[in-house]
Length: 197
Image (cartoon, rainbow, N blue to C red; front, side, top):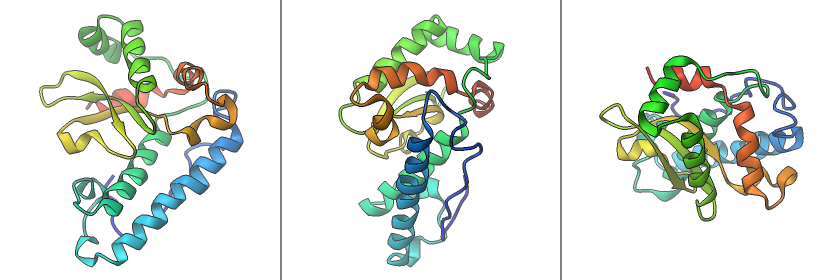
């Protein structure tokens, strides 16, 4: 993701209703066209006021000491990443190479999912849960607050779930656990495996 200013909102890689019944069409429209668009618009406004940053990529802006720049850059990047890793429910199966790596690091796929879900459910307030690759090539699970990104701490993101309420509240209300559990059905495992390379 080497985008630079001025930033643009990319179209979704699928139709708004493509993830139903896991994620409903209205949620996708509001999440993408309103929330994600707001991050793009606010980032562009903050960059207008900081011309010395305009040549930097989104990745480079994560470390900015200007909160409005850092937060909105994270919002743009994290959502681009999130949209790209989802697919029509049930249409993607975990490949053998990824399965081997997950079992090596978490004992089993079920154990990995349980730990990932715990990370997503124990994130207080708004944020994300991540599967990341560390500097040694091992896999770890972590969570970040708000629109923070693991790359700031040297991790390579492989998979992320958005646990801000706007990602699920219309359909799941206050039942974040139901959303997190159902979300596995729309994970595009081919994309996750490709991110390991």
